[in-house]
Length: 90
Length: 110
Image 1 (spheres, rainbow over the protein chains, first blue to last red):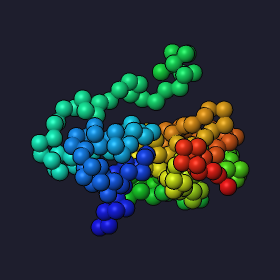
Image 2 (image 1 turned 45 degrees about the horizontal axis):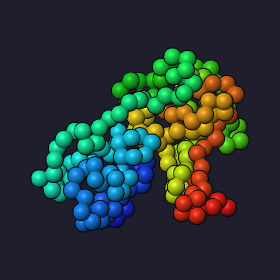
Image 3 (image 1 turned 90 degrees about the vertical axis):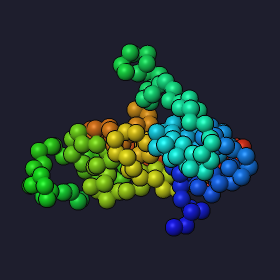
């Protein structure tokens, strides 16, 4: 399989090669990978790639911290418009 | 128009919904009332739902449960909606998401 084109984060189009490069540049936790590559920062907010990122960094570096707060889910958990919020229609 | 009329496990599928017309990027299409927009487009043979805002690569239906936001489309009067969750209605005017200009990288659109 050609890893250079393997996309980890679809929203921000982050490939496995970019993760490798970020790791080489010194990123050692899932949060550092996110800050470096924008993986998990797109429209789905990591719903698709969060587990992949965490699994990848743990496989790469077993000493990496496993704190779930590194890539937390934050409210609003579901996408809502300001109109829905104003009407209480959520 | 392609739909599953006979399912190997569920058996023959009856279509009980009313046909409605809508437009996608100005093209007139027909779907079934209340089915997800993505299903109506898929039945019309449209698989590319939007372009990535940054790179312009094609995007389509992916998770189909409202999780991944990959199928978001513009519906006139509603803004951006997830086409896998939004029921189709008569006269909907739908346009796909486009690649956007980027002032930071200097990318302009043709």
